[in-house]
Length: 329
Image (cartoon, rainbow, N blue to C red):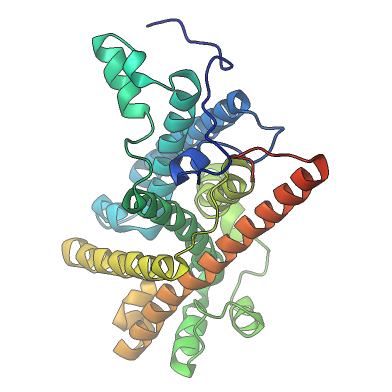
């Protein structure tokens, strides 16, 4: 391997008048207290955590969790799909951030294996392609929104069902209360009556390993993506918001199709509310599916709210400092 160049050697900063491709914005923090070399370290720590927890989650799902059905069903689990998307996003963005800092010109790297590795880790060619930028932005949005959806569905729906609240869930569906789309006071009051008497006894009553896996998948991952939005990247709100709303609806619909394939192959639905026998009717299943897709739209608005907060804070700070940085806006 060649000696790693100093981080200060060459990090190209395009002119202020040049709109920044989303790939570059994913590789730069908007905050001046997080320079590139620190961002590489922070992304590396997050990626290392995700690698370690992925191994632990895999061990738990395959070897520890008591389940009479096939392990193959985990391929169709929304929780696992959301986790894989978060992992892939952070793997890609760490690779881009690292090579953009230390190997900005991958053509300068000579040598068989090293050259191939650096080229694979480098930012994509033709970064100005609007099609490529749209696809990556949609991937980022899907990874973030799915992690948020996974948390909301678990804490407001699945956990209540696993704790013995299936009667309340079915009642909600029959009466037209869609807890996926309206996890507010009415839904919360209905579900709270079915929760265990001891708070969180269903989480911490079976050892630390299960609790760690549950919290990682349904709490820490969404926090990681929130931190990503607020501190790790400078991706702006897209101009074509309508296309992204439609794209997320399509991604949610694709997952429901994937879940149907999982049912056909494993005999088990990833979500109980996809099972007509569980919720009582096809109409109830349809209601939940609509709520699932609608939830993606609500949480995409939440994601854009986080971006708006970050942009507002960074612009106000830069305005006070008289900043003119291109990527820090």
